[in-house]
Length: 338
Ligand code: P6P
Image (cartoon, rainbow, N blue to C red; front, side, top):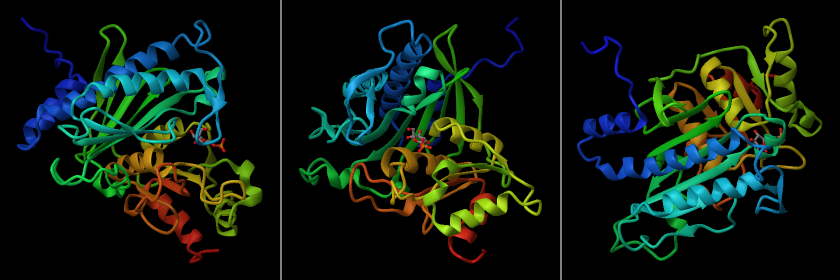
């Protein structure tokens, strides 16, 4: 007799089931996503043994962000570009590690998707075993093959509200894939025994409020006064007070916020007057996930997903988390509260 245990649901099966619910969906999308799952399994395998192989430490040189490139940054970037590059449906790829977009051979044919990604966010933490992550966002290119212009930037610089899918893979005590296609947030844990992402949580909801604040207050010396007023308030008995939790690795801080609630802030600073985090492949995907889980994501003035990007690597102030917690931050940032 077959076991009464529910059969495991892999990521591929979950995507296939989701596609059956959307008549227009075709297998192309699951083929594209399988490029991301394959690449992240390869990245996870290397991270699990970092320090034993020759992928530890800096590769030398700086990326477009002016950050020191780690060997694992380069490895992760190469693997994702390779695994996605031979998916015929991918026409354009944008990576945090590359100054310019990568145009695939399918750009004038069936390459109708744009994939933007941060191949290994937080990689400067790798040498001390802090969890890091891969972040991705997927858009459809504008128009049809016959009407598309030659400039890929029109397809890339779309507001986040047009995203088809977004997600991240967190390489931590376990390797977890979280993603959304606009029908809730679902999580899969990589089972090393079978090499598959297996469903672990469906329709994840972010708590509406939770007294956890996640912010690098080392930058407080140059925070806007409204942000300082909010942070001071969180330390009062009237507020709770709040617990401070900050890992310094966006995917880790976001994953905790998604599951336990609270608010993550990366405000403008003197060194980064537009904020540090990148709009296209960090804040947009996280904002899509946050809103799909019942949370909010803002730059302090507007929804992150409403922003129209003007350049590939532009930065933005970022306030994301529980609906009521972000609303409280915005009440200070807007000057309503002091
Ligand atoms: P800070 C990692 O370098 C990163 O891009 C994000 O993963 C993280 O949230 C942020 O920077 C941390 O920045 O200035 O607090 O070290």
